[in-house]
Length: 329
Image (cartoon, rainbow, N blue to C red; front, side):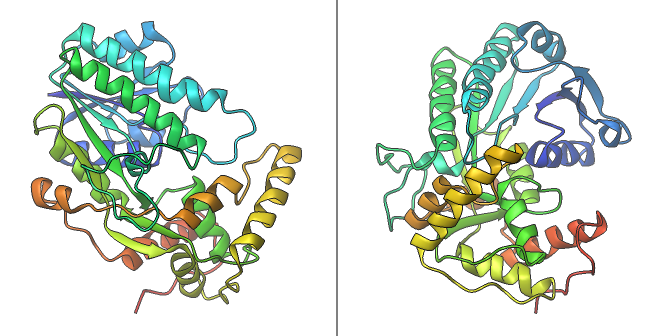
């Protein structure tokens, strides 16, 4: 059986690819012409050059594939121009699902996000939670609207299953969560603030995708291991890296720093280390339960400090940290 993975050169998509290969599946990855794919080719992965915004390249990539894992996404906060985010999440998802419907694939596993659950402040959301009705970040809004597109294709008969990961930890993460962890490990965070998030290991997210491919169309699975404070995670990253954790500061101070970070990002063209919408999200709290995925998909959530340590070791192996991180006690 051949599977197509979109976003296979990325963090979560790459983990899905590795898990498919480990299980002996034939894997094809849709990758843009500019994407580095040597590491995938060494695994025996077939590369189809194209883009989810190019319908013709999508149709060619899907040809001969029975399953699609649609993990391509723009995962960033504090973007000055959100057009690429909206096009990728909404138009890209529509293109993938339209091509899948035309090809008559057996199953599409769509990578959503636990943020679209939209639980209210202090609530722990699950698959039955009704969205609060407003969005904390533009990423949440884009993924929510993309999920509505996916639901419309489900109604048209396309067999779609939905995976909704929490904040993902593990080796290879250079997106917002990973950049914050790396900054903490390199003593480059001026302070921490007491926000709340839910975390999960990238390998558990990949395993959930493969398990969900055998479940009924229309099922939704939140993949989420532990509810923790952002200050605790980033403080632990500092400690494991052998540096002093930064002080905990009020949310108002974090918001002011984020505003300055966004101004600097506008001058440099680099993503901000901390965005105001990230502060808003964490101050509200991101609390979701992965109990259904544990119960029905057999996912076993490892301790979050172990996932954090694996990420830090990867940063050290890439030369991004000066010394090997200590193992969690």
